[in-house]
Length: 545
Image (cartoon, rainbow, N blue to C red; front, side, top):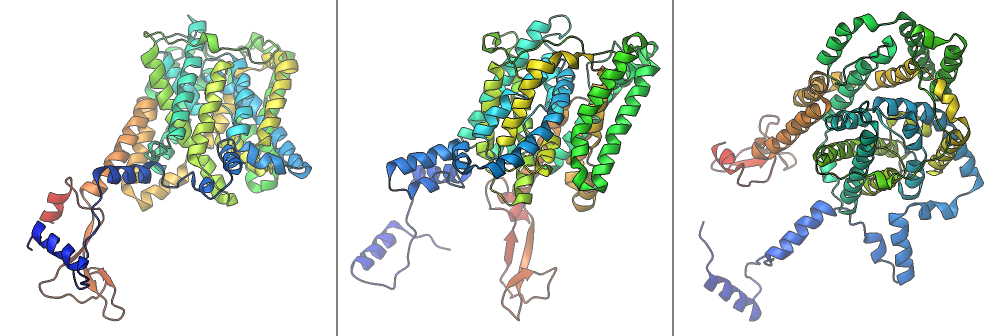
């Protein structure tokens, strides 16, 4: 095929200037800057978030639209009414009964004072109610991030030997997480979260659930010495090494409490209208086990309790942020990994409920909301929060209509902090372990793994790598291995694209795969379909094929 010289192009243009209309049309040449601008816009702004402002002629209306876009509460609050509030009040009261025991339990999981877990169920929900775009999301602490952040920070600070330094580094990590998440949202870099495939998330969550259950054996057996690592080998070694510390009393109580919590889930599955039974079950567990331990003097029988808790709302912690270069690498690592992980989980949960309810969901706006609530949370003695599935599901089933349910939750938690905090000090640690174990049992995705095995073997391998990596090595290694495999698979799709020969269907004139259809082919003509554009990484492969 010959090349077109400059003189031919010049003659062609002159021909058109002379009024000729039989020439060949050439595409308009675009400069490098134009191409780069269009590529960045397609990657970062595919949905054009400013489209709703461009049509507004009045400047004030345009400003108001912008405020409503970035601060969603101004979009739904003007039309808020009493009927909506009643629904949100019921939902808020319901998720509060779950937020208090989970806050205390997950704080214990992160080796933090129980009050920090309650603080984290007060301020972040208020921030999310203002900036969050999902009407169903219920904000709170999450189990996986609690364990991951603890394991990373414990490499530079011991929560037993120096609890003050450890707590300050947790606040600093939460600050880093908030800044990172907010920047991802502002610059619309949601593509980062897209590398967490469905298989990766399922494998990681399943592995994390097993790791968390293993960690709770310390509380169930009433042991005082236990491995701080989450992998199965270290946990088994720790149990064998300290088997003389095992007490049967907390073990029996733990089994009874787990059985009770699982029974309430069975009731909910049999009759979805009884979702509220599952929601209040953790609070009932705390109250009943606390009263029982107090009456029988459980501490004399190896049943450990939370201990004294002070009344009061969140104290400021902005002056506790520690950016010492000695600790900064661990803080940055924990902040970035937990930031991406909590975003992936929170956005996936938000999308799933938005699809069910047929409501819009903007992942980038959610990133900004998560980032701001962790940013302000780090200033007010909170640690990392996101949108846990259990609370969000309860919030949805309770009939929430807007983010006002999070405000109701925050008010209930504030009242508990002001008046009821000392009572939670009698809660036995085995009850917290039972709550975590019951919650984690529901997160092991047995059906999803079986489905992946039947549908896509490569996704199944990614899922199992994440799962086994978490329970046999560590959470961060399992996560990185599975994400790496996911990226490798994405690269394989473009570096080794699928290809097929096409032929013409005589009846309708469409071209289809010659291996699947009876089609017509023509001598000397080869029609090939590629599953990816041709570029330097696959050009040789395509040529050889």
